[in-house]
Length: 401
Ligand SMILES: Cc1ncc(COP(=O)(O)O)c(C=O)c1O
Image (cartoon, rainbow, N blue to C red; front, top):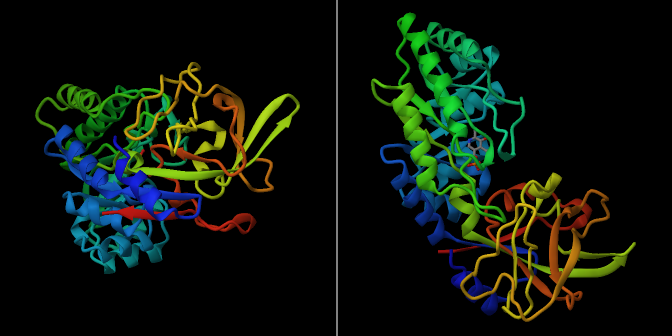
């Protein structure tokens, strides 16, 4: 993915760091790529990945709808001109007041996974279409959901029957295999479980029609991930084998795969220090102002050089892949020797360390005041950076049309 436009913007405007720059042309391109890979599926962009107005407008312009998780996200989507029917409320954890709010705004599609939420939907969103979220394993996900969401297939049957009995529309099943899912085969178990629920409901005279396969499509940060074509091939093979009579209506809820590669963060080195024989590099961005997904070193971003001459070189090995050439910058120029580093954020918090177990190398010449780029950083960065911990402002974002 070329970052030429982003580099030109940064060279001309020289905004204070840290900042995230998103190229919305890439967002539009990614939506097209996803809808081409999954023909016939409806795409609902997971707004939480990056709720910037220009990002939402780009998704809408490319024909996408939205997966929303709160009243504020609903209003953000409606404000860019999305129709309520293009929105689904995918968060199973919601107050009755949030359900009523969504219903008043015209939202008629909800995901649920618990009895009391079904009852609240029946009361505050009467007649709405309901999908029940199944718990699926996502061992190859970099940021798995654990057991926070979802239910068993047996519970899903009961919840959909309860939905029907209380006047809701038992539309179907949803699941999410965990974000940054490295295995295309991960979707099979969810599709198989959904088929089982559909078959059981048929025995009760109910005909669910919709299957929401969530997001989870990965981005090649430092390790390769399947291509969209490979993800799509695995999903359609599973659909053919578990739904031999024809696939249900398919919904996708990608977040990361839509916006990550569209964004680049420029950051400045605050300090380089030697500590017990290790070289520590402190950046002006860390866990609390944009890089929340470095917790447990789950997401390992690639670093790049703003000028091409500085060089910031993620080390090869330990699952890392050979850094790719970026247009306008070398991710790892051969002209500068690099050395191992621990990379940390700027706050006085002991947990604000980005990478101390994952091997990284940065040039030995690196000094305070030098700048680095963090690549593929458009998703789950600015949106996780909404408080001013330690008096450091939330991550600034600039969107290019
Ligand atoms: C319900 C739901 N759908 C979709 C997504 C987007 O997932 P991803 O960014 O991995 O595509 C999430 C992420 O948390 C989610 O919770």
